[in-house]
Image (cartoon, rainbow, N blue to C red; front, top):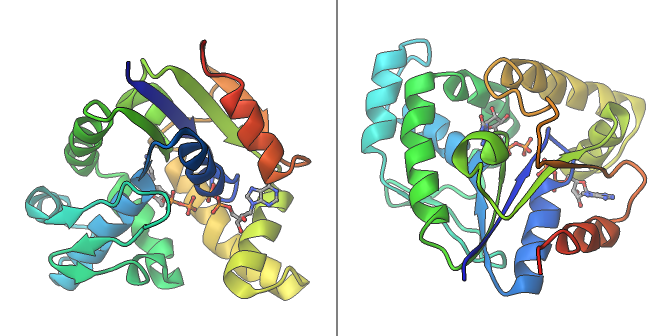
Amino acid sequence: MSLIIAIDGPSGSGKSTVSKEVARRLGGEYLDTGAMYRAAAWCALRRDINLDDKDAVTEVVKSMDLRMPLDPDNQRFFCEGKDVTDAIRVSSLSRIVSKVAVNLDVRKELIARQQAIVYSADKIVAEGRDITSVVAPDADVKVLLIASEETRLARRAREVRGGDSQAQMEETRAEVSERDAKDSTVASFMDSREGVTTIDSSHMTICEVVDTILGLIPT
Ligand code: ADP
Ligand code: CDP
């Protein structure tokens, strides 16, 4: 029998860390849908497309050759034959990815690719912003992972800038809060929905969050 675990949440709530660990513990696969939006933005920029030209961006994404890694311990992304693992994480790309993600035709294309992966898997943990609502609304376990804004900013600042001093927090705030605001205009993932368990990770360890999610798997 197949098992689908869907996890949504804002930036820095812990989605990727926790999803990878849940996948490891289950011996299953892991899908990072955010990386697909990042790769789409990278691909459009590489082809010199103006990101405001929605039709041109959509055409790029439809023809994009993207290989998604599904092994939680080997997350290397190849787009157009190039290893883009690091390039899709740089701060300048993080700042523009939402521009591509609010394009509904881009979403349609990437959601179709995500569903093809999720529904052909044996056991998979998929994370993003619209997994519980759009990509896999009939998942076996549906989680909204949240944390207070200050906690999420501090985590991101430590991860990306190596510390959570006031300056590092402010730089991170500019990058993350703006993106959260744009993201919430398309994927209303913060609305509470039936069948979705909200987990506030602000005061939980990674291990506690993982155990809580594993405990939600129907027996
Ligand atoms: P997201 O995928 O939601 O953006 P990440 O999984 O990348 O979030 O987590 C951001 C940072 O916060 C990482 O450095 C991660 O190790 C850390 N982190 C995640 N969950 C927790 C937690 N419950 N407690 C402490 N740190 C956490
Ligand atoms: O690393 P972080 O959690 O901040 O973001 P991410 O998961 O890598 O996603 C990057 C961006 O992709 C988000 O800010 C959204 O704009 C977009 N995204 C989306 O629209 N829908 C998803 N299912 C996943 C990501």
